[in-house]
Length: 629
Ligand code: AGP
Image 1 (cartoon, protein in one colour):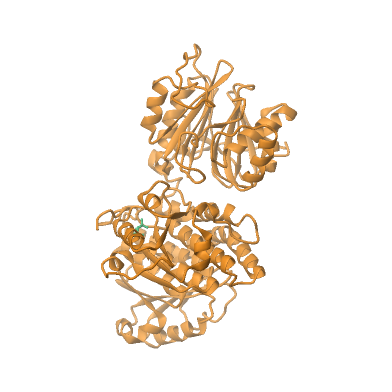
Image 2 (tube, helix red, strand yellow; image 1 turned 90 degrees about the horizontal axis):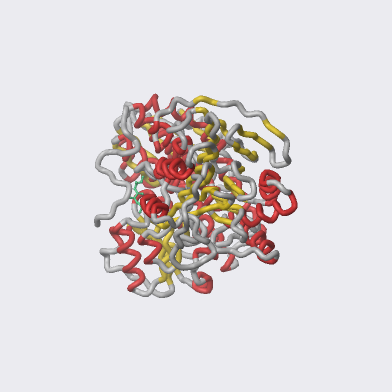
């Protein structure tokens, strides 16, 4: 999740921007940059690494070096008048490697328009081609740079930065927020928002922009929230809100009395809850450009030899913890859609069993951090034995990305909470994409069916938002009713089993309550002995071909007097008669239902742990990244 800051006012902008970026560090980043407007020119500096590297570069006087030149930055005379407007950015790489030229701000060919962008421009390839044909000179591998060229192009005809931003906005597809400044219109910033966050901070004779409130909390607590599809124009004396067609809008000022820690959590009480609420955006980022064609899946960026994918005999998925559960759902999707046999193992087990693997196999290592020692070791062993390895990870530049033959990124942004939530749903989404691409390549599904599934995948972000808005309060009430239980059994079949495993792990890791998760059909072979009237049994019973069998398992639970909490699909009335409580998730294709079904279980675990007064972001004995074997 990139971070954006902007300032326009009377005070020197540079330090305000750098300090604002430091307040957004918690969002995660791999490079950063600032641009300020001074003496009719825009001076810019960018650096790879943490913000101390950016500060060093600024202090070395490299700000203002010609961005079109290669080689070391050229120090220029510092402007006599300090700049009083500018933009800054922390980048979490998605398109393009972690390099200085891919860091923001990006600029147009004449270096008159600079932009900072968060999100993804889905149609950047066609726009880039058009701008290149008109003479634009690109200096980065990013999708974001196209916005600078597009605004510059529209400024030539529109005449003003505001009109040019509106015109550019109307051409952009995707999921983004950006801020632009022009050397030809000093003392002004223009921002726009579509899905990704951007917030205005109101000062006296100065105005601020940020991806989140901490960016400007040291200066003001008066904020204006920019809604989707809106443009804002900031001048020292005031802020205008517009629709992209130029219609002016009124926006009230809200006073926030958050402390810094609350502001970092976006107003949520914990990072985990914030990250649960970020899941719609995170999944949208993971799928947006890869499903942009509408009829199939584009995974060219993974850099895997597709002829290999056409000819492999078997896939092996290796992972740990929550990532293992995402792999399990991936296994079902790949087998169902692409008809390739898939084996799964826990990385720390597989690597010690003298495993058999061949060149005709693809090994997928799933690890959100890209640094889990056992998963990395298993991936290396697979490579040594001749297999090609694909890493599915959330962290650009992590060890897994350096070791693997190809990389499929989840684009969840930084996850602070130890309990994985948004990275899990993005891993599942990435597995769906891979499974469909394999089906396309191997011709195992009708193109019309693939198109139908792509459309369902594109609807997932909206369904996640709808689900969280509707379910948070009732799931919290259910969790509070059961928070004193000291054991929970989770049951599911097929993909529902993976969801049950993940729900059980989430509850045990943050609430310290014993849980067990079983395949429904396996319950009668042992765990049924645990059941009595005091046992809550969470049953994943969403739409799937073997739902009838799962309902029979629920009847077996009921016969022992245990309390059934069922996760079911909206419109399915078969669960009400057999469960004490039913939590409905939106209907979609049954395979995709698994991604939605896990969300009430995350919320359930969260509210049980909070009811018990626990620190969910940092549970005892656990680390976010497990680098020991
Ligand atoms: C999940 O909530 C846990 N934090 C844990 O199981 C985690 O998924 C596991 O340690 C694997 O981490 P990785 O995805 O970074 O490899």
